[in-house]
Image (cartoon, rainbow, N blue to C red; front, side, top):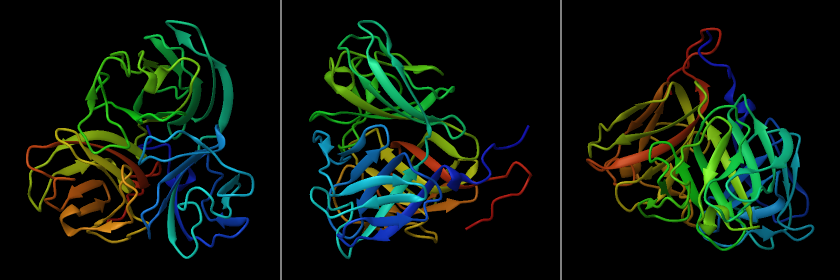
Length: 352
């Protein structure tokens, strides 16, 4: 059996940096595929994150706040998902799309196969639509809530999702499911707090290879509200989702991911703390101490005590800050690969 089915992770996930120009029809290329989910962040200024996807179309959400979904006006902000990237336009609502002179990073995921259907489980079935890539283990699902605990939503991954990031179209907290914190908790993407414990988010039900289940809370299941879910299954050599315990030492824990990470998102769950994103496009060398925070609008930060090494086979904590490595604290993470540790033909990843 081959170590991985994905020899080139950039076919499914890629980071692209560009300089905004606040002009009409600014076509950004070099992503390598037509993205279905794009996460924008202005690195140079304290501007809201901007998240768009091909299932919702020209509508945006910000990970750092509870704001309702924005319907983007014609010929403004974000325009289109293109064959090798995307097109942004004159800024009107979110500066992270195309603010003139600023460095903007985008994290891009491929889904691709689309469809629609009717949800199942307790209560009235509701319409849903989706885009999925079973090879990379990623799907985008837009569904209508039904207000009844036990509402089941097909995700079409054909594998059990390890993480789900979800947002209602109204002004509510984000909700996240992570396999390491379990089906009785939700950790809002927009907050720097410990996960909320409640049966109402995921109905105390672990996702299966076909569906995830939501409870009665409005964040995940408000009746007739439109809700978007980004679902991730783990794929060997491409993605990894897990947890670790900090030791408070500059020679911190080593997290073996089975790949050379290109992108990581980490969150302390045992005490209040924000989310942190590092990637190897914004900073190509170790230690990697340049971060952006999904729960904050702030510009890119550089803090040596938050440093990590992104190695050929995983993540090594190199700082002592509570964001990544407080002694005895528990953390969750998600990571996507630059290279698998070993390709399907037996070629090993090179150390950074």
